[in-house]
Image 1 (cartoon, rainbow, N blue to C red):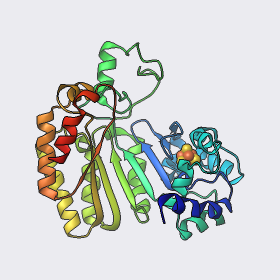
Image 2: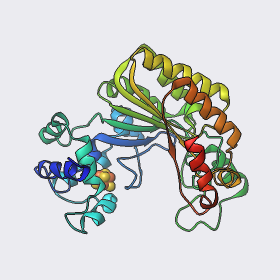
Image 3: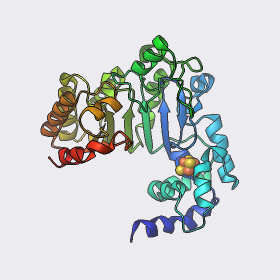
Image 4: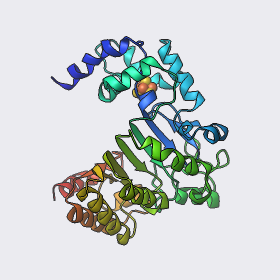
Length: 328
Ligand code: SF4
């Protein structure tokens, strides 16, 4: 069965609930603890997590009242406005596969689906979490934002926002960044973690730069003490950190895997092209450091690496060199 057939198989099943039902609204979440925001996928804009909601139930990091009302809209066959990306694709015709249909097929299990059917508005412990513990980062890439990079934030604070950006605001006066050490959202995460990790299948740690954040290391330590042999752990790293941190990661991951305390580990690192343009796009990138860290990781773990490539106009001229480097 090819991918399209596999996805189509689930359409009549999930249509039993409603034709706008999306399992990602229940079982996928990205949570930015530094700003206290969440969304179910990258298409709807993140919304604020009210502090009063997490003070009652830490799972409100994902199960906000706002998200539950979007779930209700879906159950009622309505189309939440934040999901317009999918509605636009579906308006092209039944042959077009939206992310909603793809997610429904990839997340579906009888157990998850029936639990939602029986109690659609109950809080859920999701199957996939992407978590950002803070915005601390040693890079300030051209396509990033002060919400996600402390270096970018500092630059805007010192010199003011870029004034040639038209499609989003990169000034810093309209949001609050919580420090990792003193953040009620991070506290809520550690209250929720023992419970949510019982059924979680993928945890992806993003940033900022996760290897610079204490919570990343605390989490890996916790997995040593409280194994989750069914859990896949992913980390997005810029691999521009001190080598000692990559060596520490290699040791920790090797230990967790060899003792079956986690199921799988994957690293994702960004690189857009090679040479000076690569370093210009991703301000802070030093290719020698990146390559050395990559070698240490590859040789130390023997695991594959995924490259996240933001293909852009500055990428073009040296892209063939990057492809040769990947082959190497
Ligand atoms: S319907 Fe589409 S946009 Fe909305 S949560 Fe699902 S995949 Fe994301």
